[in-house]
Length: 450
Image 1 (cartoon, rainbow, N blue to C red):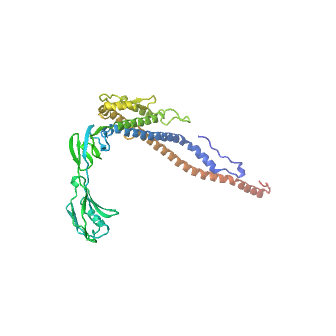
Image 2: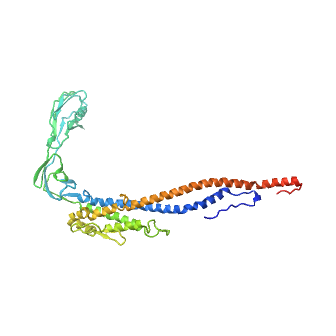
Image 3: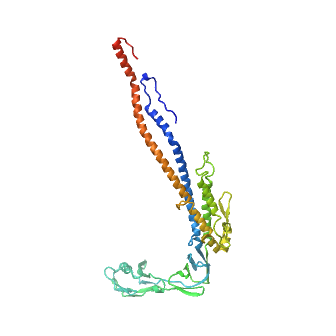
């Protein structure tokens, strides 16, 4: 700690000294004790920034890997193809679906029953009578004596029929459409409706007869009330669009393209973590060591992460990640050969599943390692490092805060004391004048002006 002095002119000058700058210099000298604390705190905070980035990237890698190790993940997904999408379009193929080829012939499409009334030239005419739909009778009264109000009454009745008004240049009609498709939704209507304004009976006409779809799946005849069929092939939903002119081939296969994307995501996420770690080796542009350079945390993360790529039991023909098209680069990152991966998926799909999902497999072992590296587990390397840093930072902040409080008190006391001393210095010329005057009065000798 350096020596701080007080600079002022001759005592008899009455100039005193600058109290504020003197106090600042003294406090700054004593505040130097905080410098190593603040330096250590800044170093820990720089590490925290790196830990946060690593934690985020390790979490991304964990999530990417989970899509492959989860029993209901991407390896369970299926995809389907139709040989004639004008006749049959596949909607979905869930994990429960079984791979294979199926032959489908569509002989009839499902239809929804509909009825409509005779045209009324003036849709606002008053109606009378009643209409019975699916056994439910609606008697026309003052609240339902127009086409529009009658349609509203039918909809409110909740009898599984949708009523609406159709209007064109010839007039208006009441349209009724069954709420259920297929033959089970066939409308049964009896009516005594009359246009009371013109005394004209209003009849109902069949727009479309309710009909089930008819198809054969692998030679088995099936019927469906809807053109969306989800029970013909387990786990597969498809849409009937037209009648067959020839059998439609439906192929259900493993979704290898989705698996390829998932493996690519794992490789990319792994490389992001490796680049984070590699970036902590050496010095920055200013020549300062990187926050984790030489730390045991960095070394442990690097060793365990790279070692995890070689762990786990084999599964059939798949014994290492290299057989999944994953290669090693000199900087520790990975590369992916899509052709080699596709070969493994097409020839040994079940072995790939086992390699990633069996107990003790590579996939399960790698997932366990990641859990022990990141912040998701209280035993994770990053989690423990962050906790240790937090404890040290709390202690340093406590020391700095206490020292600042002590210095603040000392600054107040110093200011008071030095102000008093400064006032004494500034009063010396006046006191000397008083002494001169007293001396002259006693001796009669005039000392002259000072």
